[in-house]
Length: 374
Image (cartoon, rainbow, N blue to C red; front, top):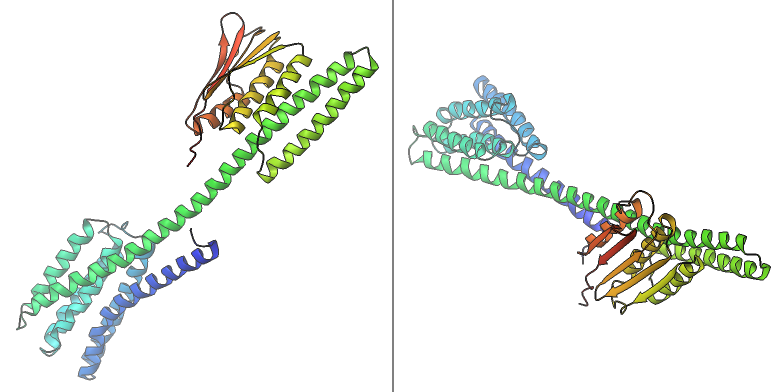
């Protein structure tokens, strides 16, 4: 079970803060360690000049590192700030190696290491590893003048810092992508729920309003007042049922009883003077979707055809609605209601067809796979 939304956001903020400050802190530590060595050696104009150079380099390295949090793997190697940072690091190493005592000369490699790490965070692959290898090689050349294989230590330091920095920048980038994907998922869930609600509302109101209009027209034509009053009572009951169904749709709890749906359809068609024949056994699953297919198909019969008969056939996991009375230009089944219905059937892996056939008939057919009982 996923954590609650506030807790998840709190964890993401914590990861952001940890990654940002640990990444920036590690680069600045490597950039400023040579400064501490210089201050430990003593004071003097030359020492102060070197210290100022090291501080300027640390600022450039920090800025480049922060760019890695927003521009991870997107900066070109010709970027001016990138080149200045790398150049300052090599100058720092060149100056510090002869200045520092042999005991501290390896610390001079920390400046190129910090620059190589920051550059690796902003450069794309494989450019990041090419520049890491180049920086490690140049730093090793600077360290060749020192005894005790300090050049090997220089290579190890540069490569290690670059790998650590890239790992932290990569963690930041992955967290950002996960957060963006989570936001997109939430927006899609809202959009899908709106589509579901719109489809259900169309199913309920479209069918019910068609029933109300048909029976009201019938009541107007009836010469018998008693029959007219009875028909209008049915109109009132249909309106109450539609209101109840709309409330259920809003709550998200509507469940269609297919047998009841078929009884209402038969009554509606017979009231409109259309002979209705229902054959086959009712499906055991996906009844809400079958109900939606039937409502849209019958609404189509009443609105767009001068039908005298309508056949509803259930066959396993499919239903077919066939009516006559198609007049005028042939229908292609691409109306708004049928198009939306086709999308809902396809969404569950089913098949849906609707269109006019020779002889003035119109067929709506849907095959819907059964729901997984597990």
